[in-house]
Structures are given as C-alpha cells and as structure tokens.
Amino acid sequence: MPEKKIVRSVEELPKLKEDYIRVIHRTSNPNSEQGIIEQGLNYEKNGTIDQTSHAFSKEDQASHYALTGKVKDTKFEYPGNYAFIFDVPNVKYKKHTNITKAPGSLPKEYLVGVIHIKDSKKTLDKLLISVSIASLLISLVSFSRMTGNVTGGINQNSLGIFFIIISFITLGGFFVLRNIK
Image 1 (cartoon, rainbow, N blue to C red):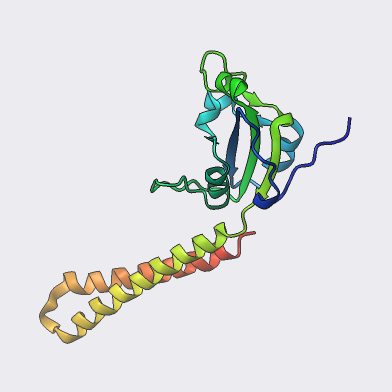
Image 2 (cartoon, rainbow, N blue to C red; image 1 turned 60 degrees about the horizontal axis):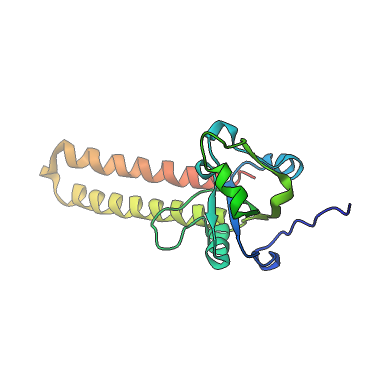
C-alpha cells in the first residue's frame, strides 16, 4: 500500500469530505511531530479528543484556526507552533468524544496535514514589544513626576523605579525568548 501524503500547508489540504470532521491539535512541542505521524494522536491522559483538539465542519474555520490558533468569533487563542490536522468520519469522531467509549488515540490514518506555524514567534515578539513599550512609557511618566515634584514622596519614587526595573526585565525576556529555537 502506498504511503499517504501528509501536506505541510493549509493551501494543500484536501477538500473535507461529506460527513467528515476536521480535527486540529495544536502544540508547541517540536518532538511530538514524529510520534503523531507514526502512531496517531494519543489523548489518553485528557479523557476525550475534544479536551486536546478542536473539531470543525467547515474548511475555512479549520484553516483559520490552524494558522492563527484563534477560533473565529471568540476572544480565545490557543498556543502552538504545530497544527496536526486529521480528517475523521463524523460517526467515528463521536466515539472519541464519549468519555466512556473513547479509545484514547486518533489513528494516524486520519492525519492529513502537519503545519508548522512560523508566525507564532512574531505574535510573541509583538506582545513582548508592546509590554516593553508600555512599561517604558509608564516609567517615563513616573520619572518625570518624580523629578518635577520633589515632595512626591517615597511612593512615587518607588513606583518609577519599579516600572523601570519591569521594563528592563521585559526587554531582557524579549531577547531571551527571541533566541529560543
């Protein structure tokens, strides 16, 4: 039997067949890829598949989630640099959501795609830069108040110093996280 092709981009995903559900599991663990490709998705410790993955009946919603980690029309964002995409018959999927009948793993035969989301690091960068800038601005305002008003007292001085320290810690964290591969 020929080996099944696993696609590496959302654009290459096959059309979702009628009566199938597209199940997406996101993770940040780069070591999980080979295991999931060879053995399927083990969700045994989570009880049911819907505790570790999201299911979609519409391709556009599944693609949006695979790329962004966001479920449309919600404020929630799910982390992970890797999206494992399974196309599962709806009848079979129901068994995986029943706590009393769930087998504990989604077979590798349903795996259709593994997508490495490279933009998730950019999102983290933007967040850390925003926090750093906000801390620096607060520090500058606090510091200008300290120097402009000598009678400001210890609380105002401490606040300014606190925000300056937080700014440097955040910027340091930004550079450390940026260099993690």
